[in-house]
Length: 266
Ligand SMILES: [Zn+2]
Image 1 (cartoon, rainbow, N blue to C red):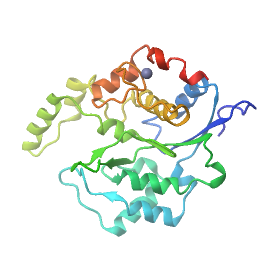
Image 2: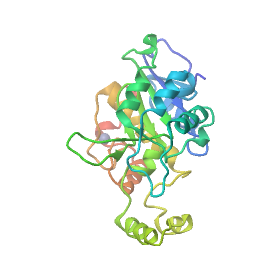
Image 3: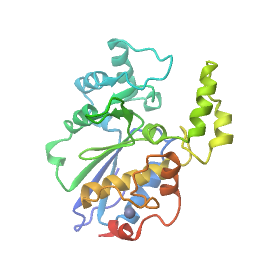
Protein backbone atom coordinates (compact mmCIF):
# COMPACT_ATOMS: atom_id res chain seq x y z
CA UNK A 1 0.00 0.00 0.00
CA UNK A 2 1.58 3.31 -1.07
CA UNK A 3 0.46 6.12 1.19
CA UNK A 4 2.21 8.93 -0.64
CA UNK A 5 2.54 9.15 -4.38
CA UNK A 6 6.14 9.02 -5.51
CA UNK A 7 7.53 12.38 -6.55
CA UNK A 8 10.78 12.80 -8.48
CA UNK A 9 12.49 14.65 -5.60
CA UNK A 10 11.63 12.06 -2.97
CA UNK A 11 14.95 10.27 -2.71
CA UNK A 12 14.46 8.75 0.73
CA UNK A 13 12.07 5.94 1.38
CA UNK A 14 10.74 4.42 4.57
CA UNK A 15 9.38 0.90 4.22
CA UNK A 16 7.09 0.62 7.22
CA UNK A 17 6.22 -2.97 8.16
CA UNK A 18 3.53 -3.51 10.72
CA UNK A 19 2.64 -6.66 12.61
CA UNK A 20 1.24 -4.90 15.68
CA UNK A 21 -2.51 -5.54 15.90
CA UNK A 22 -4.79 -2.58 15.16
CA UNK A 23 -6.03 -2.58 18.76
CA UNK A 24 -2.57 -1.31 19.77
CA UNK A 25 -1.36 0.77 16.82
CA UNK A 26 -3.24 3.00 14.39
CA UNK A 27 -0.78 2.67 11.56
CA UNK A 28 -2.82 4.77 9.14
CA UNK A 29 -2.67 7.69 11.56
CA UNK A 30 1.10 7.15 11.84
CA UNK A 31 1.53 7.15 8.04
CA UNK A 32 -0.54 10.32 7.64
CA UNK A 33 1.50 12.11 10.29
CA UNK A 34 4.80 11.04 8.70
CA UNK A 35 3.69 12.04 5.19
CA UNK A 36 2.63 15.48 6.47
CA UNK A 37 5.56 16.14 8.81
CA UNK A 38 8.33 14.57 6.73
CA UNK A 39 7.58 15.82 3.20
CA UNK A 40 10.93 14.65 1.86
CA UNK A 41 10.21 11.03 2.74
CA UNK A 42 8.19 8.53 0.77
CA UNK A 43 6.35 6.32 3.25
CA UNK A 44 5.50 2.84 1.97
CA UNK A 45 3.29 0.80 4.28
CA UNK A 46 3.72 -2.93 4.08
CA UNK A 47 2.38 -6.03 5.80
CA UNK A 48 4.34 -7.61 8.64
CA UNK A 49 8.04 -8.07 7.89
CA UNK A 50 7.94 -11.77 8.82
CA UNK A 51 4.93 -12.40 6.58
CA UNK A 52 6.50 -10.55 3.66
CA UNK A 53 9.81 -12.41 3.84
CA UNK A 54 8.38 -15.66 5.16
CA UNK A 55 10.29 -18.89 4.72
CA UNK A 56 10.34 -22.05 6.85
CA UNK A 57 13.98 -21.23 7.66
CA UNK A 58 13.03 -17.78 8.94
CA UNK A 59 10.41 -19.30 11.25
CA UNK A 60 12.91 -21.88 12.48
CA UNK A 61 15.52 -19.18 13.11
CA UNK A 62 13.01 -17.06 15.05
CA UNK A 63 12.21 -20.03 17.27
CA UNK A 64 15.95 -20.43 17.90
CA UNK A 65 16.62 -16.96 19.33
CA UNK A 66 14.17 -16.92 22.22
CA UNK A 67 15.59 -15.66 25.47
CA UNK A 68 14.65 -17.19 28.80
CA UNK A 69 15.76 -14.01 30.59
CA UNK A 70 13.19 -11.72 32.22
CA UNK A 71 10.49 -14.38 32.21
CA UNK A 72 7.47 -13.71 34.39
CA UNK A 73 7.09 -15.84 37.52
CA UNK A 74 5.41 -19.13 36.72
CA UNK A 75 6.16 -18.98 32.99
CA UNK A 76 6.74 -22.43 31.54
CA UNK A 77 9.76 -22.77 29.25
CA UNK A 78 8.49 -24.21 25.97
CA UNK A 79 10.07 -27.09 24.06
CA UNK A 80 11.66 -26.58 20.63
CA UNK A 81 8.57 -28.07 18.99
CA UNK A 82 6.23 -25.75 20.88
CA UNK A 83 8.34 -22.74 19.96
CA UNK A 84 8.20 -23.69 16.28
CA UNK A 85 4.44 -24.10 16.47
CA UNK A 86 4.10 -20.69 18.14
CA UNK A 87 6.17 -19.01 15.41
CA UNK A 88 4.33 -20.81 12.61
CA UNK A 89 1.00 -19.50 13.93
CA UNK A 90 2.16 -16.11 15.24
CA UNK A 91 3.32 -14.54 11.98
CA UNK A 92 -0.11 -15.16 10.43
CA UNK A 93 -2.22 -14.40 13.51
CA UNK A 94 -0.31 -11.56 15.09
CA UNK A 95 -2.88 -11.06 17.83
CA UNK A 96 -1.54 -14.35 19.21
CA UNK A 97 2.00 -12.98 19.63
CA UNK A 98 2.72 -12.72 23.34
CA UNK A 99 5.03 -10.38 25.26
CA UNK A 100 5.83 -13.44 27.37
CA UNK A 101 7.93 -14.63 24.43
CA UNK A 102 11.20 -12.72 24.53
CA UNK A 103 13.89 -12.59 21.83
CA UNK A 104 17.60 -11.92 22.01
CA UNK A 105 17.63 -8.45 20.48
CA UNK A 106 20.73 -8.32 18.31
CA UNK A 107 20.37 -11.85 16.89
CA UNK A 108 16.78 -10.85 16.00
CA UNK A 109 18.06 -7.70 14.33
CA UNK A 110 20.71 -9.66 12.39
CA UNK A 111 18.15 -12.25 11.30
CA UNK A 112 15.74 -9.64 9.97
CA UNK A 113 18.53 -7.65 8.34
CA UNK A 114 19.54 -10.75 6.38
CA UNK A 115 16.05 -10.90 4.81
CA UNK A 116 16.19 -7.43 3.22
CA UNK A 117 16.50 -7.84 -0.58
CA UNK A 118 19.71 -6.45 -2.05
CA UNK A 119 17.84 -4.10 -4.38
CA UNK A 120 16.08 -2.46 -1.41
CA UNK A 121 19.14 -2.25 0.83
CA UNK A 122 20.05 1.28 -0.22
CA UNK A 123 21.28 3.93 2.21
CA UNK A 124 18.35 6.02 1.05
CA UNK A 125 15.81 3.45 2.19
CA UNK A 126 15.01 2.62 5.80
CA UNK A 127 13.25 -0.62 6.66
CA UNK A 128 11.29 0.12 9.81
CA UNK A 129 9.60 -2.75 11.59
CA UNK A 130 6.72 -2.26 14.04
CA UNK A 131 6.12 -5.37 16.10
CA UNK A 132 4.61 -6.51 19.37
CA UNK A 133 7.55 -8.93 19.80
CA UNK A 134 9.65 -8.11 22.85
CA UNK A 135 13.46 -8.10 22.60
CA UNK A 136 16.15 -7.86 25.25
CA UNK A 137 19.81 -6.90 25.11
CA UNK A 138 22.61 -6.34 27.58
CA UNK A 139 25.82 -4.38 27.46
CA UNK A 140 29.07 -6.42 27.58
CA UNK A 141 29.77 -5.23 31.14
CA UNK A 142 26.24 -5.87 32.41
CA UNK A 143 24.79 -9.00 33.98
CA UNK A 144 21.13 -8.16 33.52
CA UNK A 145 19.21 -8.14 30.27
CA UNK A 146 16.99 -5.16 29.55
CA UNK A 147 13.84 -4.97 27.44
CA UNK A 148 14.21 -2.62 24.46
CA UNK A 149 11.84 -0.06 23.01
CA UNK A 150 13.83 0.21 19.81
CA UNK A 151 16.79 -1.33 18.00
CA UNK A 152 18.27 1.29 15.71
CA UNK A 153 19.93 0.81 12.33
CA UNK A 154 18.98 -1.00 9.15
CA UNK A 155 16.45 -2.37 9.85
CA UNK A 156 15.09 -0.41 12.81
CA UNK A 157 12.79 -2.40 15.06
CA UNK A 158 10.24 -0.74 17.35
CA UNK A 159 8.46 -2.96 19.86
CA UNK A 160 5.03 -1.93 21.13
CA UNK A 161 5.55 -4.34 24.04
CA UNK A 162 8.94 -2.72 24.65
CA UNK A 163 7.24 0.67 24.99
CA UNK A 164 5.14 -0.86 27.78
CA UNK A 165 7.88 -2.92 29.41
CA UNK A 166 11.24 -1.20 28.92
CA UNK A 167 11.07 2.28 30.50
CA UNK A 168 10.83 1.95 34.27
CA UNK A 169 7.55 2.47 36.11
CA UNK A 170 7.38 4.57 39.30
CA UNK A 171 8.84 3.13 42.51
CA UNK A 172 5.38 3.04 44.05
CA UNK A 173 4.22 0.60 41.37
CA UNK A 174 7.02 -1.87 42.16
CA UNK A 175 6.18 -1.57 45.85
CA UNK A 176 2.57 -2.49 45.11
CA UNK A 177 3.65 -5.27 42.75
CA UNK A 178 5.90 -6.82 45.42
CA UNK A 179 2.97 -6.70 47.88
CA UNK A 180 0.58 -8.48 45.51
CA UNK A 181 3.19 -11.02 44.44
CA UNK A 182 3.92 -11.90 48.06
CA UNK A 183 0.32 -13.12 48.07
CA UNK A 184 0.78 -14.99 44.79
CA UNK A 185 -1.21 -12.37 42.85
CA UNK A 186 -0.63 -9.69 40.20
CA UNK A 187 -1.91 -6.12 40.61
CA UNK A 188 -5.48 -6.07 39.21
CA UNK A 189 -5.95 -4.07 35.99
CA UNK A 190 -8.56 -1.90 37.73
CA UNK A 191 -6.06 -0.87 40.41
CA UNK A 192 -3.47 -0.04 37.76
CA UNK A 193 -5.97 2.09 35.84
CA UNK A 194 -7.10 3.94 38.94
CA UNK A 195 -3.75 4.58 40.60
CA UNK A 196 -1.23 4.77 37.78
CA UNK A 197 -3.08 5.68 34.55
CA UNK A 198 -1.10 8.84 33.87
CA UNK A 199 2.22 7.32 34.91
CA UNK A 200 2.87 4.49 32.48
CA UNK A 201 1.64 2.77 29.34
CA UNK A 202 -0.25 -0.50 29.51
CA UNK A 203 -1.12 -3.04 26.80
CA UNK A 204 -3.90 -1.91 24.43
CA UNK A 205 -3.34 1.64 25.69
CA UNK A 206 -4.94 4.34 23.52
CA UNK A 207 -1.70 6.39 23.78
CA UNK A 208 0.47 3.69 22.17
CA UNK A 209 0.18 5.03 18.60
CA UNK A 210 1.30 8.50 19.61
CA UNK A 211 4.20 7.18 21.68
CA UNK A 212 5.28 4.75 18.93
CA UNK A 213 5.27 7.65 16.50
CA UNK A 214 7.91 9.40 18.61
CA UNK A 215 10.16 6.34 18.38
CA UNK A 216 9.58 6.13 14.63
CA UNK A 217 10.76 9.74 14.41
CA UNK A 218 13.83 8.80 16.48
CA UNK A 219 14.77 6.02 14.06
CA UNK A 220 14.28 8.33 11.06
CA UNK A 221 16.36 11.08 12.74
CA UNK A 222 19.12 8.60 13.45
CA UNK A 223 19.18 6.86 10.09
CA UNK A 224 18.72 9.72 7.65
CA UNK A 225 19.99 12.73 9.62
CA UNK A 226 22.66 11.20 11.88
CA UNK A 227 20.89 12.60 14.94
CA UNK A 228 21.22 10.39 17.98
CA UNK A 229 18.85 10.86 20.89
CA UNK A 230 18.10 14.40 22.07
CA UNK A 231 19.07 15.59 25.55
CA UNK A 232 16.01 17.82 25.89
CA UNK A 233 13.36 15.91 27.91
CA UNK A 234 10.54 17.81 26.21
CA UNK A 235 11.62 16.73 22.68
CA UNK A 236 10.14 13.67 20.94
CA UNK A 237 13.69 12.54 20.19
CA UNK A 238 14.44 12.24 23.91
CA UNK A 239 15.45 8.71 24.97
CA UNK A 240 13.44 8.31 28.16
CA UNK A 241 14.42 5.75 30.78
CA UNK A 242 11.23 6.24 32.78
CA UNK A 243 7.65 5.82 31.65
CA UNK A 244 6.61 9.18 33.02
CA UNK A 245 9.40 10.94 31.10
CA UNK A 246 8.47 9.02 27.94
CA UNK A 247 4.81 10.09 28.19
CA UNK A 248 5.83 13.70 28.84
CA UNK A 249 8.19 13.74 25.83
CA UNK A 250 5.67 12.14 23.46
CA UNK A 251 2.31 13.53 24.53
CA UNK A 252 2.92 17.19 25.34
CA UNK A 253 3.55 20.26 23.20
CA UNK A 254 5.72 21.58 21.73
CA UNK A 255 6.68 18.34 20.01
CA UNK A 256 10.32 19.21 19.39
CA UNK A 257 13.13 21.25 20.89
CA UNK A 258 14.25 24.30 18.85
CA UNK A 259 17.14 22.32 17.35
CA UNK A 260 14.86 19.57 16.01
CA UNK A 261 11.76 21.59 15.14
CA UNK A 262 12.59 21.73 11.42
CA UNK A 263 14.68 18.56 11.13
CA UNK A 264 12.16 16.50 9.17
CA UNK A 265 11.18 19.13 6.63
CA UNK A 266 14.48 19.07 4.74
ZN1 LIG B 1 15.42 17.64 20.26
